Image (tube, rainbow, N blue to C red):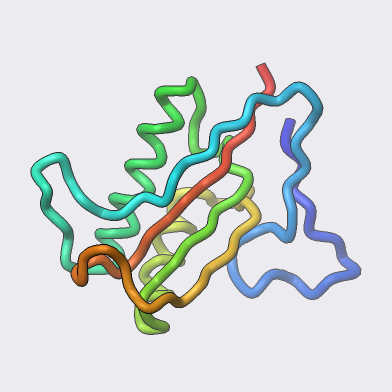
Length: 129
């Protein structure tokens, strides 16, 4: 069982994430590479929200291939190309994680491999079998 850590000795997180997540001994780990929003047909959605949703869909597919689900995610690192993309990314993240949010970092970066991309998301998941 994952333990979400948000001690009352720290300021509450700025958004829907945990300050930390404890992984129990014996858990399996999956590290997902950064996912960009590109479909099998090489299409890239225009909006940041649609891109973030597709990135999370990709992460979900990776986790399913390991017998895991999104609630097994313990950490997210996300990157957006500008402050104007933060809210759309956070809305997509919050829609996926609800009351048990993973630890999370969001950074603003200069760009990605293709100019159309506005967000990239990587994740770490843990599961006790």
